[in-house]
Amino acid sequence: MIGIAYAEGWQDYTPSYYFKPIAGVVTLVLSAKCVKDFVNGDLVGTLPEGFRPASTIQMPATVLSETADVTLSVGSNGNLILFDKNHQGSLEIFTANITFLSAL
Image: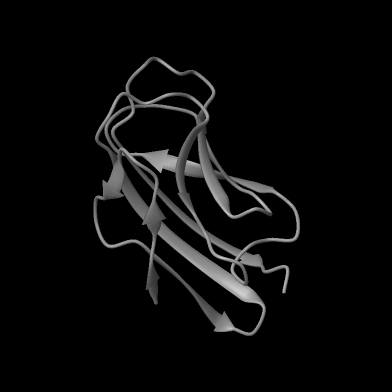
């Protein structure tokens, strides 16, 4: 299991990690805390080559600190980007558990 490389303003809420339990399959377990003002479409972190999908995928995420409609985007460039459809200017903690096929 490998820890997440967070972007500035993000950190673990509980240990977050990614791994390949089976060749070509990536599991991402993310529990992150925003320690700055959240901006919709914020870069949370980046996955390295070999752990990225062939094309961008979007999955729902759960916000622990409020009611929100949040999506985590995992880009083919490795970027983990968080979108809140009803952004109200505050988003503190979110979790996501995603399994996908890697590009390699």
